[in-house]
Every structure is written in C-alpha cells, then in structure tokens.
Length: 63
Image (cartoon, rainbow, N blue to C red; front, side, top):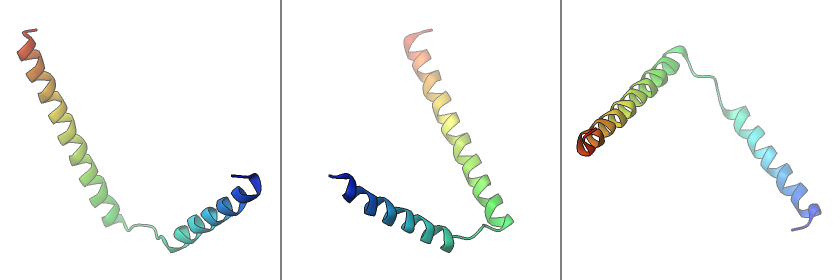
C-alpha cells in the first residue's frame, strides 16, 4: 500500500470518529453511578474468583 492510498483511509477514519463523538452524549449522574456500581461488582467478583483459584491451587500443592 502506497502512502498516497493511506492518507484517504486515515482521513475517513478520523471523520468517522468525529461523527461518533458528535452523536455521543454525556451520561447522567444516575447512569454514571449505575455503571460504576456494575463495574465495581464485576471487579470484586473477578478478584474473589482469582483468590479462590489461588487458594485451591495452594491446597492442592500442599503449601
């Protein structure tokens, strides 16, 4: 691919990004808190699962 072919592709990609940013809107406070709550719960669940896996492997190895 030549340099002259890359510039139009980059320009069209940037135009798509700008179009999406114009459509997007800032979330309300309730939406933001709901998202933070869900992410926090998911992070906690992933941490607990990882901890339980670590405990199980330590028990299996006998450490």
